[in-house]
Amino acid sequence: MMEPWEVKIDDRREEDSKKVFIIFCEDGAVEPAYFETFKRKDVHVSAFGNKKQHHAQVDLATEYFRKGGLLEVVEVNGVIREVLKLDDGAQAWCVYDRDKELNDGKDTAFNDSIATANSKGINTAWSNDDFELWILLHFEDVDIQNPEYLNRKKYYERLTEILKQSFPHEVKFQNQRFDYYTTMKSKDNFLKYTYQLMKGSLDVAIERAEKLEAIHLTNPPKAIHLHCPCTKVHLLVKELRS
Image 1 (cartoon, rainbow, N blue to C red):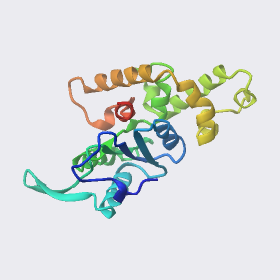
Image 2 (cartoon, rainbow, N blue to C red):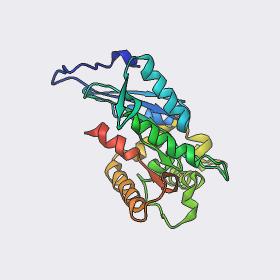
Image 3 (cartoon, rainbow, N blue to C red):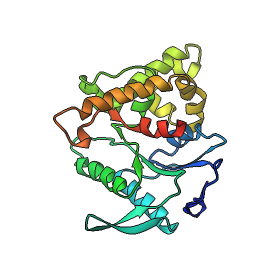
């Protein structure tokens, strides 16, 4: 795991130096495991799991970089704020979900956390309602007109059926009590089964995510928490691949 003080911040970079991605993940198993699959000789990925949600994660990331001396105080349009200072080859990302519950009153916190992170130079790869939407897009389109897709329960249901159909001879998937949420949220199961199915479908997943993104960006403009179903994980993935 790379410590913040190991990220160079001077102007001198060798042409063959690595790109560095510092990624804070809400999930403690699947998300870090997924992003680490993008590691290459020239790409370093430090994915930290169990790093909370919304503002709590942005605050944690901010404190991480502050302790590493990677935040500088600047004035922008008369406003004093902290801004991340990293070498040109390094990027910082926060990955978290809306995880909406009925009348939870967290819409403003979700919206503000994105704005706060971006104002500091920290990128966000949020999902609304959750990360499993990104996984599902590797297998099928989602119907934005279907209200069931406003909640992660539908993503889990579809992924449960996909795993059952894809592994007809795997006992664990044919058990009547099998469901994606309780069984497939571990690193080992994700890499052994779900990720193996996802491989080869990355381009189409990006296309589907971009399609959802474009639909929500059409007029009239609406608050970020209303961009659902929607995921911005593809933005991070495109950077990791570039």
